Length: 163
Ligand code: ADP
Image (cartoon, rainbow, N blue to C red; front, side):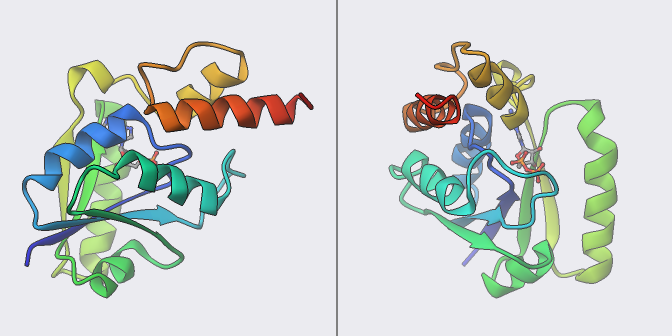
């Protein structure tokens, strides 16, 4: 069985992530989205919220599941019997960091291959941090995230403002 993991912070999952996940779901038998516990900055959404939103967003994709992980990415891949780590590339600016991580991960475990998927042009500008910022200032995120995330952002911002 060809299994791949798609690791990330998913704070929150966006239409750009979903586009990559949908596209690779046709290439592998099984995809496990790995929501990383270890986020450098304090995330807007808790780990449980990030997992639940990702689960709701991929509910219609039969071969995609969501789990959290608190280990090295390659260790999570091995634990899931995956031979591939899928990462999305939006711009040249993503490249250096991704290249470095892929080399390090290969150093740690050469049997796990990193596979890069180019962002679709309509999502090439999209990031979770941009979505968080737009939502915080009351902007419209409808086309940027699945409906379940749009709702969760509205609730989160309202409760942060005490409303
Ligand atoms: P991380 O904190 O590990 O970068 P993210 O949740 O921000 O986690 O992203 C997870 C993966 O999805 C990364 O490979 C990232 O490059 C990719 N990604 C994020 N946004 C997009 C997008 N709009 N299009 C394609 N790939 C994306």
